[in-house]
Each structure stands twice: as C-alpha cells, then as structure tokens.
Image (cartoon, rainbow, N blue to C red; front, side, top):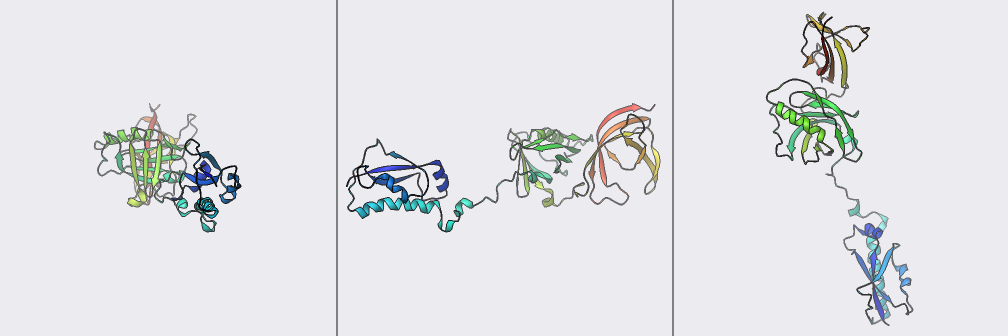
Length: 328
C-alpha cells in the first residue's frame, strides 16, 4: 500500500493551548493514505484532540512513497502523534498545566491602591544632570485616595493633584504648589525636582519600592516610609489635609495659650465683610505678617502626628498671598 506524508499545521488557538508543553512542536507530522485507499485522511480525525488543524502538503506537494511492513506498523504511525498531542493539551485529571499557572511574585504592581501611602526618595537615575539627594533632608511624597499628593521637596512643603490612567500604571502629576521658604543648601535640588514631577507618566510598585518614570528615561525611586521607620508629620492618617483661603486682619489681638500672647485675626475669605473675625493660634510657615496690612492668603494644612498638648494638630503652610493691601 502506498501512502503519502502530510503536514498538519497548528492553528493559533492550538498553539496557545499547547504553549506550556515543552514536547509539542510547531507542526505535527502524520502519515496518511492516499484518497484512493480504504483509509481516507478524514477518518483520522477521531484520533486527534478536538482542535482545529490546517492541512497542507510538504515541500512542493510531492507525495512520498512509503511502504509500511505491516498495517499494524502503519496504524501506529497514526496513533502515536495523536496521543502525544492529547497528552500535551490537557494534563491527567483535568487540572491546569503547572507551568501555565505559575505567577511572578516579583512582578510590578500598578493598581490604583499601589501608589497610595508615604514614600521617601532614595534614588534618582536616568539623566546626566540628575542631582544628588541633599544630605540631612528627607524628600517625601504622600499619595492619598482622593487624588491629592503632598510632601517635602527638600526645603518647602509641596502639594497638588494627581490622576491615574487611562492605562494601567499610567499617572499624571500636576505641577506642585510649594511654600516659599528659602534653603541655600537644597534649593537647586528642589527646583529640579519640582520640574521633574510633572513629567512623570508611569508608576510601578515592587514590594516596598515605588518607581515614578518619565518618557525621557528619568526614574525616581522611593522607599516605603513604613519600611524606613522615619515618622513624617501628617502621616498618621487620622486627619485629612485641608486647604483654606483666609482674610487676615491688619492688627493682632490678645489671646491666651500657655501664656498670654498675640494672635492673628482671620476669617474665611469674604468680600462682603459679614464674616466674623476669629483668633488664629497656629503658626503659618512661610507667612510674614506686617502690621497695618490686610491679607488674603491661601494656606495648606497637614496633620501633625502626636502634637504637644498646647500645639495645633495641623501644620499650616503658606501657598500664596492672593491679596495684600494697606488697611483702610
């Protein structure tokens, strides 16, 4: 009996199904009889797994003459490849292939919850002019679940808004607002840092590290503040950050704390003049009050972890002086 050799190419679906199997090859070679013989190629389908195959003749579609020594030998050439296919496609017992179910425990995490928390900058890479981290100054970022961030830039407090998406691991960071204190030893670093943050487009978290990446190849690597075990003001999570716009009176008033002293008089910004003045006991970092001048200021508050009994539970910093006019 004369037979021909036909090559059966795997369909994309079968390739995907058998991809974990190291024994499976890109093509399966079966020996099939000519159409004129009693065994037609269509009768081989019962021996194959229920997947789609695309047949085509090898080389120039020339038929290779093979003369098996017996019909049993011939039948074996049909069944052995089919059995190998079935064994590779589905492991015994109906379970999944162990290699296909393996997961990488060190893979980057890029879900919305993975950016949350307080992080301290430990490495800046990817730019020839990347500055060295200032000694003795912690560079922190805290991302909350309301789309806001805050932290320190090396000298000033910084804060702003961020958004995630639309793709996984994508982030847009608004240009940070900052207080207006001057620090000779870290201002150059802070200026460069505040310029880089808005260029960040991606984030990923690996265990206790968070990496922010920019399209130009710069990466900012942060370590979890919990891991570093260095307390950060406002990281207790018991009080939310707060932004306020206040009118500040041109004169201070007597107030009593631990001892008698002078306090600012403030009220929620109001052009009608109907709001009542209140005493402001807390200090506002970066704000220099002058007598005889009325101010309208924007300030940002961060919670203070374990404040003294006679101190404010919020740390207030100046964002911007919106208006400054001589008292009428």
